[in-house]
Length: 305
Image (cartoon, rainbow, N blue to C red; front, side, top):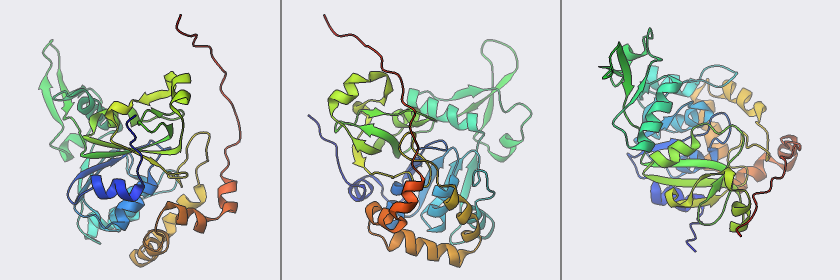
């Protein structure tokens, strides 16, 4: 059995070097804050951060000075407003200048699919009438080889390392997800190295008994990190809800660089790991995020004759 278990500290130390490209994906749910905080803690620099919706997770990493470039689609604090740390970096170069490369959501989806499929580009029609291609020269238009109008294409995206959060996996890295999946599977197949962060490690028999939930096979996974509540303040379906209180609080904190740095000191630099972060957050707060219950139906897959 190929045991791929490691700690978050080990995963970041081994796979994230200065200057690499990093994708921490998860669309609304499954956002790898524990991974981001460890990257900040280890003071990585000059990273290219890749993500469909940068969210608070990249606002915090950019505030900590980890990034030189951001490749993204929608940019904002979902349901709240701007990402103020990203704006400071782009508009004022604080704490350091940030290069941006913007796409539509479907443009990023296409880039991930092309990267996962080892294609030279991905064609899409959604840039017709859009001004995004004027701001991003990597979006190009080519003649349709089957006739008709020109069509937009985007290049493949293959991050040096991806951090994917999920509900569970076995020690070999066979990963099961359910809920709002986003592009987790495609990113895993596109990335050169894949670190899977899960709420729990389960026996191989659990994986085999529910094969349709296994979206990422162990053959593309390089490391597995067990990290309960590793996606907080986002949510993991069936494990905990979104911590809206923290998203609202971040809007006020992040408007000021000094307050942002104080928050990073308190919640990232001054806590050695995720366990200490959760202890600081407190059981009462975690209990408020309990998801309740709505169980899926059992099915019979049969057995071999």
